[in-house]
Structures are given as C-alpha cells and as structure tokens.
Image 1 (cartoon, rainbow, N blue to C red):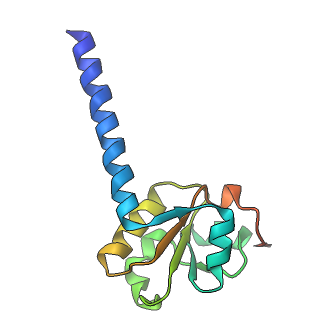
Image 2 (image 1 turned 30 degrees about the vertical axis):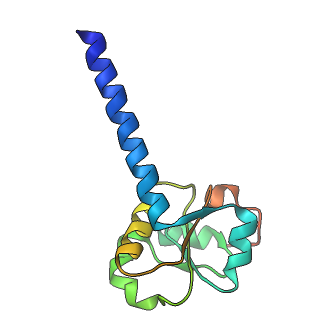
Length: 126
C-alpha cells in the first residue's frame, strides 16, 4: 500500500512538471546567452529581481521591474517590441511574468535560459 502512495506522488510531481514545462513553452521562448544578447538591441530588457539585487549587478541596458510590480508597470512596456526577461536563475518569477505578459497580449517574450547566474555578456555593477 505504501509503495502505491509513493508512485502516485511521483506521478503527480512528474505531471505537474510536464504541465509547467508546456505552459512556459507556450508563453515564451527560452534562449541561450548568444541569442539573448542578439535580441537586446531590438527588445525591452527587463530584470525581474528586487531593486537591491538589480543595483548590485545587472545586464547592461536592463530596466528593473521587480516581479511583484509587473502588473502595475505593464503600461511601461510596448507590445510591438520583444520583451526579454531574466532573474538570477530561471525560476518561478520569470515563468509567472512570461505567462502574465502572454495573457496581456505580448507575443515576443524571451527568457534567458539560466538567468544572470550564467550570463557572459556585459554587466553593470555598483
């Protein structure tokens, strides 16, 4: 009986992970450093981390819109330009932001594959 419960939990977790994977794939394209860097000039680069993290270090040219302020700052973004999102690593904040933006009518949404932690391009530090 105990092994059936463990199997059910495992299958539930796998189903949830699969659901999230396809949900994010429908909302945004996950790109590596080189593709992300190529998109920066034509897109809107958004750092979703809190202000203190942003001021310590961020990708050069990024605008800080902490994830909890995205809804109130939505009018600061243009729907006709790509939106490039990142945080420290690809976590729940960037996933939620991409899904929210997609629901608001944004179509070109890109996520930096492993976030700022793996970024090799130019950064600004304080």
